[in-house]
Image 1: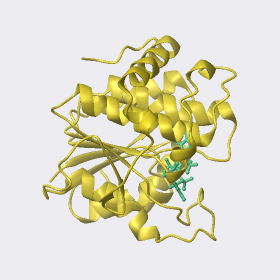
Image 2 (image 1 turned 60 degrees about the vertical axis):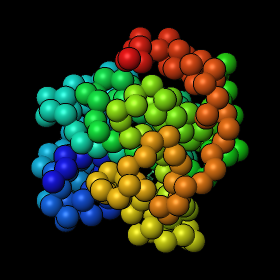
Image 3 (image 1 turned 180 degrees about the horizontal axis):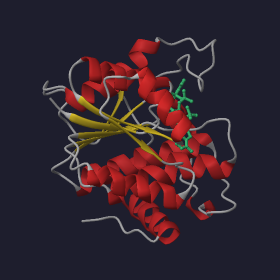
Length: 244
Ligand SMILES: NC(=O)c1ccc[n+]([C@@H]2O[C@H](COP(=O)([O-])OP(=O)(O)OC[C@H]3O[C@@H](n4cnc5c(N)ncnc54)[C@H](OP(=O)(O)O)[C@@H]3O)[C@@H](O)[C@H]2O)c1
């Protein structure tokens, strides 16, 4: 039985992954932005053990989520799932780029890390010169490139952790919209598989998956100089260094 933390698990793919893992008997810790969404998450995933609260667009609240997660002990796997698409550039930057960085740095190192990206990251640019707390000029595609870049930096620097990124496809959640053409179940199965599978194919690091198949990712994410600049820009903004 594994202990797994999933950000943004009140709804969508996070909630579905949480349900699937709890149904398999794993210890699941949910996360929601506020108490009301926390109650909703618990209703939807009654098999979960806890729900942690915090708005990931706020740096202090995100730090607090890390503290509360650490108070529960070390996790076997963390799924960085929370994300926004139709939102201000500031929220996209804070929730999609900065929150996974903060939580990765401040939480006790888990055995496995899974970062939710998107096929749209292929069109993203690192755009590091536009990293600003108040007025970032970052697109959704850029932010989804950032999480792949973070994932590949983690995979390179922490050889004792399996860190992988996932493109769930375009699926019918609140974010994807009702008309989204891809299979909803396939949209969360890969994260669940990477979190707990004992298959050798899933116990790898530094890969990008779509429907449990390895896919090519944007080469900017694998550029170690760019990764270092990315980590140092995140550190400048948050005051948090990337731990050794
Ligand atoms: N759906 C797609 O077609 C698609 C495609 C490619 C990639 N993805 C990626 O897959 C992940 C999950 O997406 P989804 O489709 O499941 O989206 P979703 O249905 O909109 O769910 C996103 C989750 O993130 C939470 N969240 C958003 N902003 C937050 C904040 N400031 N603080 C705390 N929690 C916050 C949401 O909370 P609330 O419920 O309270 O809003 C929700 O639980 C995202 O990273 C997304 O970028 C999705």
